[in-house]
Length: 120
Image (cartoon, rainbow, N blue to C red; front, side, top):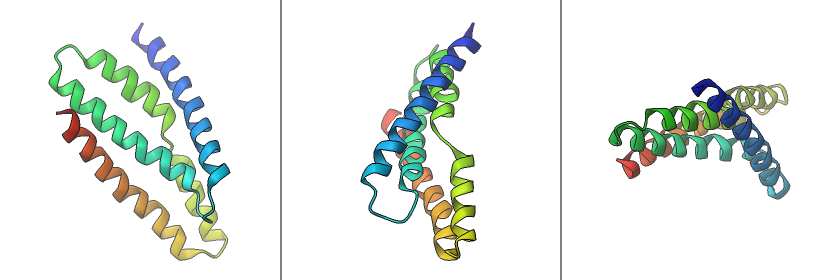
């Protein structure tokens, strides 16, 4: 039965990603794919919180799986970030193509650390 909850949560996460990315894109004045950065960094923070909470609450594994694997798995998007970096490279924006994924990796790592620290 857990797989059904993970699947439903994944669908809700994907819909949330679409909504957040669309909202950010409407207000983005930069020439970078800011929506994906916001989605992925917030997913890292939230997954850090879920992981920290799950490790300190016995029996929280099921909820952590539904939220982490399901919702946040559907919400975050490594593949979109990779395609955006490739598009930047193809557009002749080599520096942006490198800084986009590198910056997202560093920001995501810091967000995950912050989430774990806050929840532990």
